[in-house]
Image (tube, rainbow, N blue to C red; front, side, top):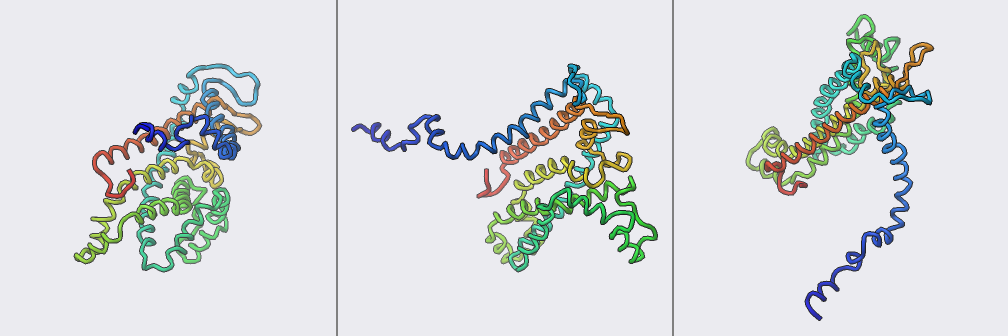
Length: 327
């Protein structure tokens, strides 16, 4: 027997079979995946494709007739004042909420990563509970808590004599967006906290112990060890949180419905209003127009996701990261 024959015999049988045979051997696995795959096709892939299709039509969504208008919907969007205002609100919401959420979650992660804190698992759970709580429930409850009419928040402030009259947390255009940002950050704070904790736990404790022996204090250890080693994780966490903060439809719809006076109408609420809106007894549904707005918003999110990929690659090519970090 030649050496090549011996090597061929040493190759596992599965590697020598074709792709079709391997799929057939794992048919039970694919059969179990089939229901989930069908649901993804029905509720994710199909609506995505059809939104691109309808973006080129003038269609209310109710009539059987629809008229091909090419790029007219996109041209109308470029001249739509409400579209740009909604886009600006979404960008402003994400630009304000993201750094606050990242800073607070990182501070919490650093504190709760301390092994001397015996109740750390309990506090982690408490901060993560709002994340798993239904968004609609949180929004509805908070709309009652911050109500201008006998809401607990206003009652507490008045009982402490901090204010003389109730504050319109969710009814005043000057305060509603700040209130929404605060509640949104509180609800989702636990998610990036878990991400930061995962990154912190990859840092060898021996480095901290060696730095402490050399006389480095907490701040020096944080600057010289924690910050550089968290940088690869920080890039990914920042962009994941940023994309998430651009998608606040369920939260804002249940909390403010885009009001008052459109002051919290972000892009997703604008798209919803264009697709299913009505003014009195007159329907204003423009499903084709709303689809075009959704396509533009989706392209924006794709651009952010691509920026994430390039940022991570550029960092790694520049020698970022540390020994043992995933590459």
